Length: 264
Image 1 (tube, rainbow, N blue to C red):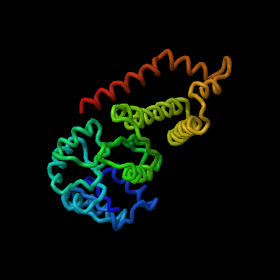
Image 2 (image 1 turned 30 degrees about the horizontal axis):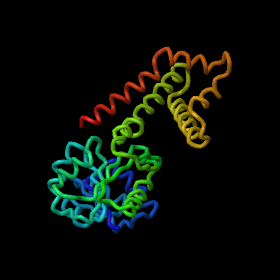
Image 3 (image 1 turned 135 degrees about the vertical axis):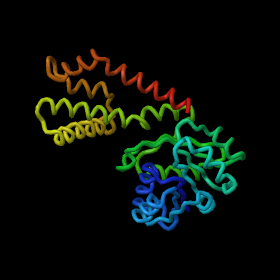
């Protein structure tokens, strides 16, 4: 399988790292484009892959082509490469807001399309990606795509109507988690802990808590209750978080995220 990337930003690099580490493709079978020579050289030196400034060259040579540019450039890029894309190639979109119907309209013909929403923890092999595809993609082809996406974390199929929800619950949510970690560290610093140490304690607490949810199968509320001793410190902190509207703030932020995603 020959794999191509149009664009070589953070998400493309995260995917490339996982793909090559897990030997999904040989580096000789991967090509990526980037506008700047510095970006192309960085990709060549880091991953040993082919690089080019020519999007059409990448589109022609790839069996599976990942559109890894920003959403605002999608229309321009698709119009540039559409004549180089035939009915055998699989196109993977990672852009929020760009539906399968919109993508097909831009290509102006039936194309094998996969729409997905990854997230930045893919950079450390812990990504979470929601995936859907059109009817042109066979089950066997979809399995190949999932292998690519799972090389840098986890991936799950779901209906396209839920992709915008994926944007809020996993695509954008690392930003919310980073804010939470930063806030906890700020509080620890205010109480005398050195900042670097505060970040380690807060981040490890979040990592361990997430792992408990995934590995125990227990409801998050049950796990929360396990920490809250009667009359103790934790329940007092939970009381204040509820009083300040933490739960509502998160819900409203995520609903705003979904709304914005659907408007893009």
